Length: 268
Image 1: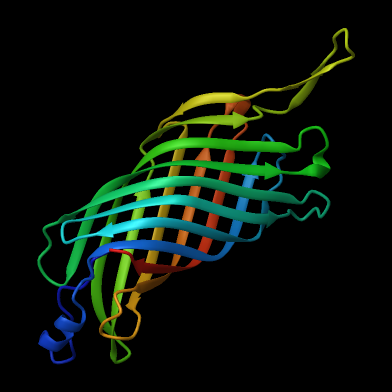
Image 2 (image 1 turned 180 degrees about the vertical axis):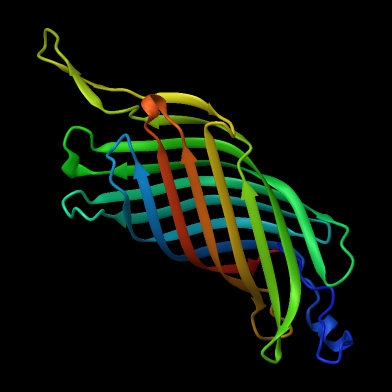
């Protein structure tokens, strides 16, 4: 879990003991659910040279452990869906995605009223594009396994006569492996039974030379009302973008803007 605010700066420049006590970081193990709205933008040159964009939704379920020295999180279910179209109305694309993730961050020594966490996440995701109006070549997908270093910054701020718990995060890809379906299209091969449908695919190691992925987010964390209520929530914005170079110079670019509400329920 994300630990914030070892002290809150108030208008007279001092740290109030009562604010420190009220903002004491929560610790424990939590069940996590986050959901929200998305706006996706993609261009898959294996599918077409058109740029697609459209609305969607996201739902994630997981388990988060937060203590004074580290944050650990399993995200068991990662689901998203976008309905995208270009200026040409007749090539709508359904863009579902699914996967899971493990995150581990260690707290660094940071004096003052801010905290820095550094670590990495390992994730496996599938990003699918389904375009029935394209006929034979209607299914495209990226199955990606990767490792991404991540850094979080948590701090308290005074604004509009109240205290805010603000959390920033950033992660970038380091290495991975992908299977892309199909490689560049679907073909047919004649045989004694009439014909066989051939769908090529491409496998490749992902490095900064052929793949780049960046995820950033800004969140406001708040506790539910009640001094004995251990649960809390975050409201935030996330931007997830990746670009991948493929065979025959057929590349993939995908960006997802997300407005999310994350709920944390303490289980231990």
